[in-house]
Structure formats: structure tokens, C-alpha cells
Amino acid sequence: MNSEDTIAAISTPVGYSGIGIVRISGKKSFSIAKKIFHPVKSKINWSSSSFKMFYGWIINPENKQRIDEVLLSLMRAPRTYTREDIVEINCHGGPLPLRKTLELVLRYGARLARPGEFTERAFLKGRIDLLQAESVLNIIQAKTDKALEIALNQLRGGLSRKIYSLKDKMVDLLSLIETEINFPEEDIDLPSIKDKEKKFEEILRIITSLRKMGKEGRIYQEGVKVVIVGKPNVGKSTLLNTLLQQERAIVTPIPGTTRDTIEEMININGFPLTLIDTAGLRKVKNKIEIEGVKRTYSKIKEADIILLIIEGSSPLTKEDITLLQEVKREKTLLVINKIDLPQKLEKKELESFFPEKKIIEISAIKEINIERLKQKIAKFVNEEVISSSNGIVISIKEEEILKKVEKNIERAFKTLKERLPLELVAFDLKEGINKIGEITGEVTTEDILGQIFSQFCIGK
Image 1 (spheres, rainbow, N blue to C red):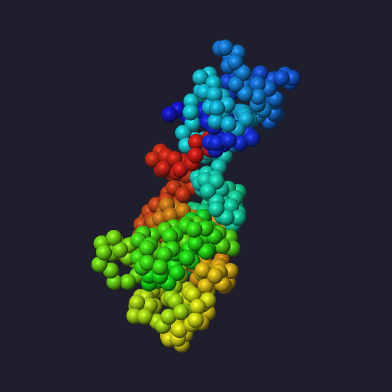
Image 2 (cartoon, rainbow, N blue to C red):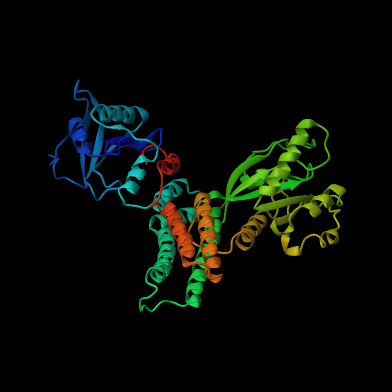
């Protein structure tokens, strides 16, 4: 599709609301608006008006039928979201007036925008880089205040500045090496081998730091996977329902009620958590239950945190001990449930499995110590899953690119230390610099752009 086309879309969610917006961007935006918009009082200077709002009606030019009473915003390039002329028609927020207004806009010269095409144009026109473009999607999809804060920081260029700083250091090192290659006989003050090694070490430290911070930051966007496991009837589904404050999972005294995993999102202290209720772990023969247990073990492998539930109202069983031995202790909290009943569990038996600080006693059905459990989960996320809130998020795609850059730098560094030809060092540095360009969008393809912007909604 031609990037010179004028595009249009409904930029507000489908449904019923006070206001809905039809957005137009491109060279024909003002001329299209002039054909279908009739101001009530103000006269519009269509050749110079900008960043002004006008009250009037959308009218079908063919039959003079009034479509909707609206407010029209005019924004002239280049100081707009797309760096093109933009018109926004603020309609009443029902599906019919919005659809009929959009139909008129399309009839008189615009085409329907693809998902994310407005933001794609902002990127292609150089108003934002690819990292900032992706942050727009993160703002829309933010589930917590912290996720929104991180996304806004990236829209302001927080991550871009770090990436460009890394690139500058790599370019600076490459220029020194190429000077040494191209002018070996000149009287130029060149850095020593040790100085170049220090520069390589600094670049590697920055890459390691970025990858670490990016992984931690993604938690605020994608959430922490919290898997609830235990033998049948220890209260896993009851705990899920209690944390969610709704009857999401079926609870019965019959073992094996939960056959498949159940996943729901919850916000605890600013962290988006995906709670995953699983089938009870025990020896089973029924094919359906076997599959349920298989899926439970699969979820345990993916988990960031495991909530291992045992009963306080009964002694430890062989099934409990097997689970205590199998789970990864560094990412597990041990939850003793049913403390509202007479206690038969010998807590000393747990000392060899878990330290006291990773054990909490609750009653899921009576909601005893549930708030303490939430606080313990939040503290666990802070201490074990992330080390700090760093204000950046690096996507999996960007992390993969950074891994490749890291390999280029490590190979170049090794070549330098082995006193091999500097041309080989320069080659790997150049490759790394080009890969950095894939992150910022300086080096990209239509396929990559299509994949990124297809995740956006139409109208953004």
C-alpha cells in the first residue's frame, strides 16, 4: 500500500460511549473534511487553520443527510503524530454514527488504515524510532501503574538513549581500529592494546546490564507466572478463587476435579501476576487425569514462582514429600493451608526442605492470612525475580539481537587479545553495529515492520 495515501480509521473502541473519534491522516485530510463537514458558526480557513477545533455537522454531500453533530480538530503537518496533516472527527460514541462518518471519509478520498499504520507513519517520517513506536503498544496494553510508567519512559526515549549510547561507544572503538588499519605509518596518537581492551570490556558490561534490566522490566509488561501446585484437595482452587475474589475454579471434595490448568490475571502491589491453578499431583490411571498432571509439570517448568500447597490438618504424606523434593526451592513459597482446622502437621519435618521465611500458614476458605500471603508474594518477586525497577523493557526480539551483538563483541575482543589482524576485529564490530540498527529501526525490513505494527489496533 502507498505510504502517500490518505488513511482513516475509527480510533476509539467499538461499543457505546460519550465520544468516538474518526482519525484521518495524509495530504487529502483537510480536503476530505471540507467536503463533509459544515461548521455551525465559525468560518474555517482551510488553507491555514491548525490546532483548532470547530463545532458543526457531518453531512452527506450527495443527499444532504445529516450524519452526526461533531467537533472537528484540524492539525497541520509537521507538528502532528504522523508528521502529516491530521483531522480528528469527534462524533457521538455509538457504532452507527462512527461507521457512517468513516464511510463518508473513505468515499471521498481516504482508504482504511491497516493496524498500527498511524504509528508506523510516525516512525517512517522520523518522529519516533522503532523502540518508541513499540512503547506506544506497551502503553495501550499496560496492566499496572508501573508498566505504564515504564512504557511512558520508553516513549520519551529512555531506552533509545541507552541503545544509542552503546552504539556510539562501538562506533568510536571501530573508528580507532580503522584509523590504525588505514594509516599505520602516520604519526597519530593511537590507543594502546590495553586501552582498546578496556573499551571492549565496557561495551560488554553495558550489553550485559541492558539484557538484565530488560528481562526484569518485561515482568511489569508480561507479568509473573505464579503456579499453584499440590496434591488433590489441598485447597489449590479455593486459594485461586480467594485471591481473585470470584468463583473462577470449581471446588468439590472429589479428587481430580481440576483436570486442566486455569489461568487468571491479578495485580499485587503493582505486579501483574498470572495465577495458574493446576491439576492435583498424584499417581493416576485415567487418561484425562494423566494429561492434567502432565500439563501441571509443564507449567511448573515455566513458572517464575511456585506456590506449593500442603495441608496443616493432616500429617505429611509420601505425595507431599515427593513434591517438596522435586520443586525448585529457590522459586518456591511453601503454603500451609487449612489452619482453621485442628492441626496434625509436624512443622519440624519441613525444616529440612524450606527455611521459615519461605513458609506461610493460611486458610484459603476462611481467608486467614491472605493479605500476608500477597505481601509475601510481592516481596518474593522483588527479592528473587527482579533486583530493581529500572524503567526499561527490552522485548524478546530485542534481547535476541543483543545476544548476537554480544557474540560479535566477544569474538572481536578475542581476536584482539590473540593479536590477529585488526581487519577481523573491525569486521565483527561492524556486524554488531548493524545489528544495533535493527533495534532502533535504522536497519529493518518490511517483514519486521509488518510483524511489529500488526499487533496494534486499527486507528493507532
